[in-house]
Length: 139
Image 1 (cartoon, rainbow, N blue to C red):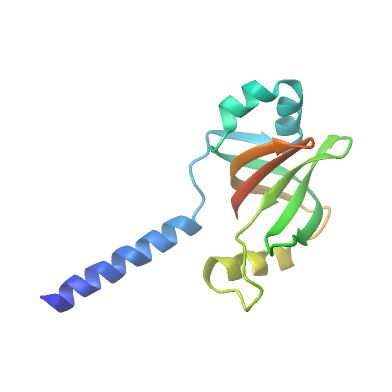
Image 2: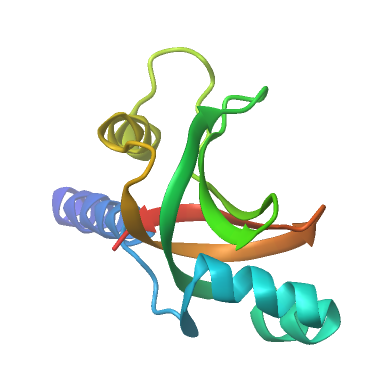
């Protein structure tokens, strides 16, 4: 009986881990340009619509990098001056990344600037004319 309960517990944890790696159902499908324009026109309305919501955002990669706290990201061209959508992936601690962080780093290695992508991300904030999204997965 204990053995069966242990198997059920392990399977449910595995299902939760897999669910986190899968894309979420988006409230909207937008281009990076349209998203930046929407925030630029009316930040309050755009924040009310998108804040902490999952979206599918499409655009051309203009930069690929890892920030100072080891969060991998890509910038999608917002086509309004220097404005962009900064799409962040899972952070890793500088050691060999494991699990989802490893998949995200491996994924970034396959990206290239100029490549068109569609990402499923959660909208976090708008600042300095950039829309910041996180927990991204490729659609």
